[in-house]
Every structure is written in C-alpha cells, then in structure tokens.
Length: 507
Image 1 (spheres, one colour):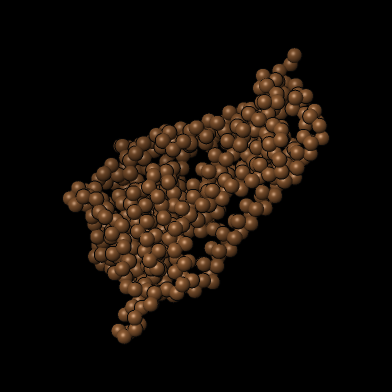
Image 2 (tube, rainbow, N blue to C red):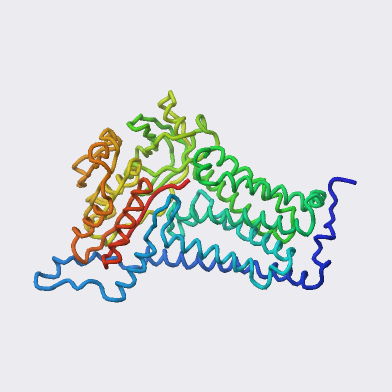
C-alpha cells in the first residue's frame, strides 16, 4: 500500500447514505457564499456611516446654559434625544471582569457569532454528520478572508470604517476562534464517519489534517494569559503557521480555493503595502523612569516626508533586537518635521531588549502612521485621561486641541487634562510647559492613592455647563478605561451630551 491514495474513502462519499446527504451538502455549498454578501453589506453600512460623519454631519458646539440668558431655564434634551442617549449609555457601559467588553462590543460579537450559528444549523445540517461536517468546513473557510482583513496591519478597515485599533483587533480574535473551532469541528464530524487512521492515507484529507493541527496550535497560543507571557512565540507561530495553512487548504478541496486565494491576496497585499510604506531612519533612545525608554525617530534622516495626526500609531522594527517583528506604538509627539517620538514601557521581548540595549543609536524601520483618531470639532470640552504610558496619546492630543494655529484654531474646545502616574519622576517623560495653553494636572498615586476616576469625569462633565457637548478620551490601564467609560455612560443616561473614545493596544 502506498502512503498517499488520491481517492476519497467510501465512508466519506456523500452518495453512500442516499440522496438527502448529497442534497444537504449541495445546499451548504450554495448557501454558504451568501454569508460574504451579509458581511459585505455590514461593512458598507459602517463605511457609509463613517463617511457621513466625516463629510456631511454638521458639527456644532453645544449650547451652554450661559448662552441662553439668565431668565431662560435649560430644559434638557427632547424625549427622542434622551432615549437615543440612553441607548448609547447602555451600549457604552462595561461590566467588571478582566476580559469583559462594553455591552455594545459584546452585542456586535454576539451578532457575529449568532450569524455563524445560523449558517451552521439552518436547513437541517444536523441530520447527518457528513452534512454537519461539510457545513462546519465552509464556516471555517468563508471566514478566512475576513480574518485576514481584520489582521492586516496596514489597517484598511480602519481607514474606511473609522474603527479603533482596539475594536477591529477584538473582532479579529473572535473571527480567528470561529475559524479554528469550526476547522476542528469539521475534522471531528467527519472522523465519526471515517476513522482518522484511514483519512491520513488520502492526500487531500491528510493536508487538511495538517492544517487543522496548525489551527489548534494557533488557537492555544492565542489564549490571553499564554499570549501575554510568550508574545514573541505567539507572533512567530501566528504568522508562519497561517502562511502554511493556505496552501494546505488549497489542495484540500477545490470549492474552498476562491476563499484561500482571497485570503492569500489580502495577506500579500498587506505585506507589499507595508514594504512600500516602510521608512528606514536612524533613532536614538533616552532612558526614562519606570523602566521606560523614549525612542526618537529622526524623520529628517529620510527623503520621505512623514506626516501624522495626534492619536495615530506606527509599527516599529529594529532588526538588531528582534528581526522580522513589527510592534505597534502610539506616536507621543505632536506633528513636526524633525522627530517622531515613542514612549515604550519595558516588559518582555522586544521592549525589554530595547530598554537594556547598551547602544543609544539604532537603525529603525517603521511603517505607518495608521489609525483614524476622533476629531473633537464642535465640542465645548474635551476630557483627556492618561495612565502611565497612556500619555503617548493624551499629551500630543491636548497640545493639538489647545493650539492657536492648529486644526481647532478659532474654535478650540476647553481641555481638561489628568495624568495618573505612580511616581512624580514620570513627569519627566514629556515637556509639560505652561505655554501650551493646557493645564496639565498630575495625580501621583504614591502620594495621594488611587483617584476616583468616575467622580472626576462626572464633575468635569458637569463643570462644562448644561447643554455642553463633552468628549472623554482615555488611554491607560484597563481599570482607568472602564471607570471613565462607565462614568460617561451614567452621564449619558442622565441626558448629557457625551462622547467616549478609548485608545489602547490589546495584544
């Protein structure tokens, strides 16, 4: 007997148990492609909504109580506006829990999972293990282009939908879990009809078993505690196993090839775009307090003009420290023609190697900037909250908002700035000059204990005045983000005009 026999075992033939098996698998193969139309429609809605907000939505400043006159009482929002804000309040609220998300995010995830369950069980897919296994296989494959699109570092979806890096990364993880679990289920379902000991002797099935093993390894390595402890290994497995999976699936079954090709095109497009946008510069490091290093990229050392906005991020590679690894960091400096600064906390792997490096000069490759940070046009007050290294986002944003010559010139919102740090030494990370027209408030936890963030946010919103349009933007540890989010949610419920934005990288 040869090892590879290019023939499907009789146990797996859809004709062996009657016409209904053939009809069931045939329906799956016609029904599954419509899934892509549903996903495409959702993305088009998100894109249209973002485009409308960017180009057609009229942004006007909130009408504060003093403008109404002393004899006119502010009556609050009308009923429709109040109900709308209360819906937003519920969606914004985030319950306690290490891995919990806001109710709005959980609703989106539930909708995505529910859509996949509908496509899995619709039209009697459980009547036979062959039909069910066939449906599971297609669920895995039709989600792969979406998975690669959500995983693209060049952020195509961010540019068109305005989603935050955090938002589409959460979707990427859940999409990945659906693909991996469905792939494993596909094998398990078919193994009840034909033993794996028989499957391994069939070329087209053997390659699928190899792909499934790769899916399992990726799934296990992506578990949050394990991923955080061994991120460098996770990154290596994530990239190279995915590259190996594509040709294996291509030779597994002819009908999945369009999805495999689409995934490969997205992957190659992402790599080519990163290569074309890559900029090679010299950089210097400055050791800061709190096991932190400032990496200053000399953008004058390249012929390419580098432009960025406050709140955008770049991917950085230093081959001498971590070859073929690109790590995301929020730009910590205001737009200027000389230096692009990054504040990096030393943890493990690349960041630790950079912090402990004996050399202060490095050759750096970066690509970006990426991201669609929010604009605060029409706001009366912007509350900026930062915790530790979250100053990377809040600091340049505050200066940009308060600048008399920048984007907001002539209609600058009032800036309420709070930076929570464990030690006063951390204030040396950035230049807190008074001439930036920003009141940089510092809260040192070693001196004052932990601040009551919910109370601070609520008081700051109330201080803006009745009817004021207020934005809350935060970057920092999870408890800081959750407390500020929930404070904004509660104020929304009470009828205040509040927008919330969080900036962080969940890896």
